[in-house]
Image (cartoon, rainbow, N blue to C red; front, side, top):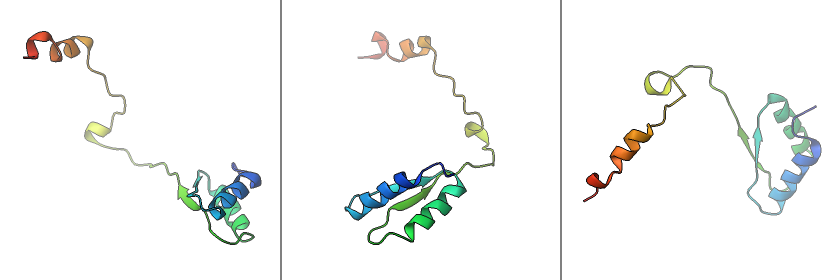
Length: 86
């Protein structure tokens, strides 16, 4: 069974047919097959289909480590202290 059921996809097609800008985001490849099968039975405006992907390559440099340490409260006080505002 697909992550998005037939009723959800049919509602997306109804919204597109009514003139709304609808995007179905595919998260699993099985969902795309399901959407295409349902699309064959519908006429009129079709919803857009987007793909959610996960990259398998690692970043380098600054983007390699996702855990970014927030500035300490001392550095925030220093940046916005009364002496720096003139």
